[in-house]
Amino acid sequence: MNKTIYLSLLGIIFLGGLVFALNTGQDNNELQDQENQDPFQQEAVEVTEETVEVVASDDGSINANNLFIPWTINKSGNNFFLSQRDGSVIQIDGDLGLVEVQDVEVSEDILHEGQGGFLGFTLAPDFNTSKMAFAYHTYQEDGEILNRIISMSLKNNIWTEEDVLLEGIPGGEINTGGRIQIGPDEMLYATTGDTGQAEKAQELDNLAGKILRMELNGEVPEDNPFDNSYIYSFGHRNPQGLAWDYEGNFYSSEHGESGHDEINLIKAGQNYGWPVIEGDEEASDMIEPIHHSGDDTWAPSGMAFNDGQLFVASLAGSNIFTYDIASSEVSEFFGDAGRLRDIMIEDEALFTITNNHDDRGEPSEKDDRLIQIPLTEKASTD
Image (cartoon, rainbow, N blue to C red; front, side):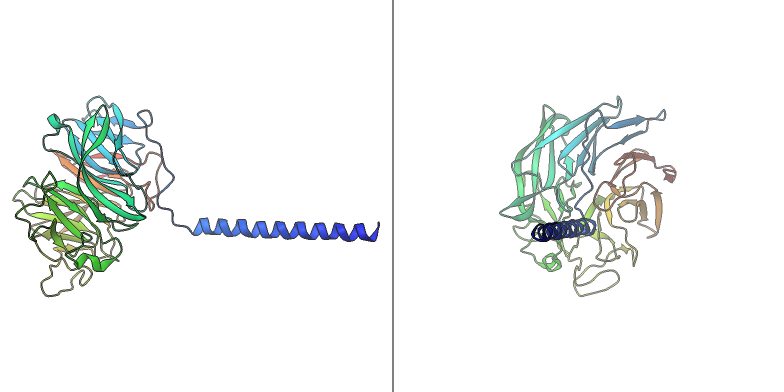
C-alpha cells in the first residue's frame, strides 16, 4: 500500500475514534446528569373521562383511580371536585360514577414546577347557586415565581377566573404553602411557605411564611391583627393544613426543617417562631406547637377535625394520623397507600387523596387515588 494512503487511513481512523470517544463521554456525562437530577415531578399522566376509574361499593363508599397529583378534596351534594396540581379539576358524581375533567382558565399561566402549581381550591359557601370557588396557584412574572389567590366560576364545564383577590405572594420551588379554606367566620384563610428563605417568615412586610386572612371579595378584614395587612399569624415554615373544632379553635399543620413537624393552635397576631425556634425550643413572644414529631418526619398536609380529634394527612409519613386534643395522644389511623395530601370528613366517612405521582412518590398501578375510609374503625389498603 502506498505510504501516503496508509498514513491517511491511520489519521482517519484516529480522528474517528477520537470523535467517538468524545461523543461517548458527552453522552455518559449527560446520562449521569440525568441520573443525578431530582426532577420536579414524575412523568405527566393524562387524565380523561375515560381513564379515571370510579369504583362504587355496595355499602355506598366510593373510590377513584388514575388521577394525577390531586391537591384538594371538595364535595357539593354527592359531587366531588378534586383540584390537580397541573391545572385541572376532576368532578366525580358519587351516585352515578360519572367523571368530568374540567379545564382551568386563568389570566396568568399556572406554573407547575417544584412544589407549585394549581394548589388550594375551595368551593364558595353558596356554590350550589353561585357556582363560585376560590383557588391558590403559582405563576411567573418577570422571571420571578409567585402565587396568587383568585375567585373562579364554573361555566360550561370550565373554571374561569373572575377576580384576583391577592397576587404577588412569594413563591419558589419549595415551601410554597398553598392551602386555602373558608373558616367558620366566613373569612378566607390561606397558608404561605417561606420559599426556602427562612428569614421572610419573621418579616411583617412580607407575605411568605404566614397564614393570611381576607374577606371573600379580597378585602382586608377590619379586625385583622395588623393594620391594613392580610397577615393573621407569622413565623411559619410551610403550613399546609387548616382546621377548626366545634368551638371555633383554629389549628394548622406545618412542615419542620428536619423532623419537628408541627400541629399549632393558631391565635391572631401570634409569632410561631420559625426560624428562631422549633420543637420544644422557647423564646420570648413566640408560640410553641401543641405537638411536634420530634426527630421523625411526617410532612403533614391537609387536615380535618372530627369528634375531638384532628385527622392529618402525611406525605413523608405515608399515613393519616390522629391527634386527640384532650389527651394530646397521637395514633396512626390509616396507612399503606403512600403519600397522602388532603382529608375531608363527612358523616361517618373520611376521604383522602394520594400524591404518589409527585417528585418524591412511588406510584402504583392505580395512582393517584381518591380513597374513602369508614371512621368507625382503623383501616388499611391491605
